[in-house]
Image 1: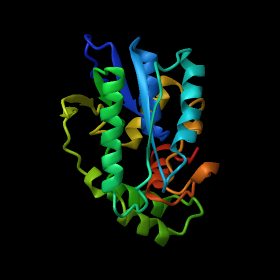
Image 2 (image 1 turned 90 degrees about the vertical axis):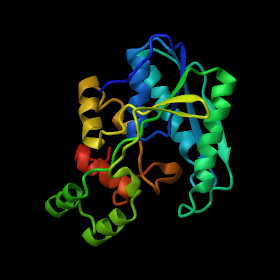
Image 3 (image 1 turned 90 degrees about the horizontal axis):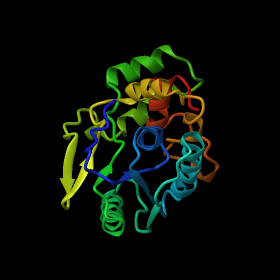
Length: 224
């Protein structure tokens, strides 16, 4: 999976949540380049586990690659308290990026955004694979997904406030990410340290049925 690197770049940021996608992207940037890499993470009042989860991933990637991040930029957004009102979350992410770019003079920011699974395939998967879940509950969570990710048309490279953003996997889905885990040989050494659940909390136990858990079932055939 192409990272779209510019040979003139010296220091880059990466939005790191601790999920399967952003964690592998961070690993790839640490493994495949000699750039100075600054992961950036945002905690919120509603979901206060991102910093803890991301710390696990950073430590694990350091063990696997022998490389430490240049710095780790943390941002807290206290006014995101309702997942159905995402504007404070989006504002927080943008502010986090702006602050990080200015503080560390970054050349670009990487984002591990991927497409949703094809919904017909996802539905068929849970109709034919028994993971001990309530199928109606599964389907209900599918309807609550961020459907803007169904058919992403974002460019691979775009700009926000004059900052270059690279979204290398914008038109890939979780099964492509699974293949990348295999190609990097970190399916069993990095993936279990990641989390994607919407309801995990500080204990990092996946609920197994929210949409983000469903993506993991569909792509990896397992939660961890």
